[in-house]
Image (cartoon, rainbow, N blue to C red; front, side):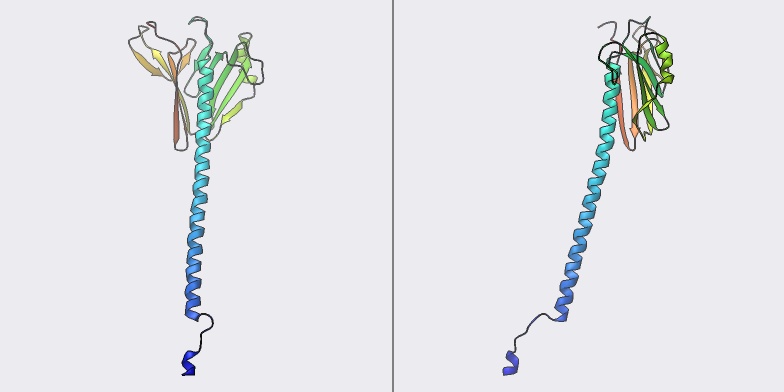
Length: 196
């Protein structure tokens, strides 16, 4: 009878192997979920960065266009095509004292949106923009397309979006910017209706 009363000390080999397998499965599940969480955070940061960039460029364009300078249709400098836009603005230029008029250009080239700015004192300043070093506002842009709302007959009864514009102000400007799978559209009215 004494032999049956012997107390066990420790675990059997099967119990140890089961515990090791359970622990390794638990650590595997924890490491995979941590890895997925870190990937989700990185994706969220990247998505947030793209959205912040698009909102930033949208705000810059809207602000510049909202402060556009014109002296009626006869003396307005404004020109643009699908990928570029130049005009006079009251917006204070970077690094300069507020006040006065500036010449601003936005251009899309090689997947980047650039701007050029200079104070406007004489008509040559418009042509001299080519001498200004461009500032890159946004990189890795898939699409930057600008269209201009036109009053076709001048009677405020037929409107159309044009790809090119020169001299007088359009009724509105629409710019579509696409980066990755994110797209934002800026729509800025420039001239009020004759009936307002």
